[in-house]
Length: 169
Image (cartoon, rainbow, N blue to C red; front, side):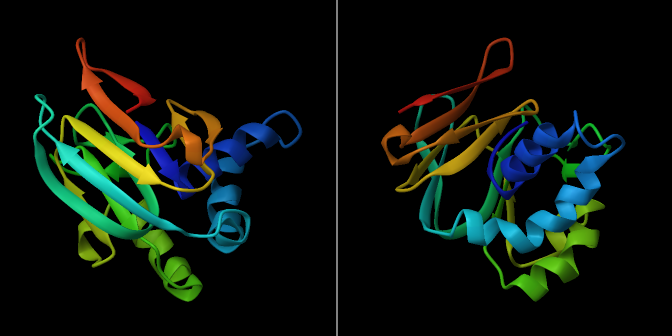
């Protein structure tokens, strides 16, 4: 799974603390990130363009997003067995929401009930292109890196043999 936003922030902070905080710090950072993320990475307008394998645009989303995640297929979970792509779709985009709503939805969303909420959009794509004009974290397979405005547009694509590839567009 490759993702940007809150998800990458949780990964980054969990990795930072692994050496000094024994045990499962993922759950701790999932809780703390709901409160801290917007202060560290204030939301900015984002455009997500879904494409087929030939690069033809399938759909476009504009707005403020909390996270965008893409897998090589649907039915994907994180290492801690938390479903992020709970059914056949391989892309999940979750729109920004107020803090109290984030806290209320954290449990149901982390148990795979993502489709139950208006803030979540799940769809399938071979390629997504993300346009963003600020810094934000990206993570792929548990390793996080910070991107800056000059790194965009960003493409996340499935490529043979179904390995995700992240590159400037």
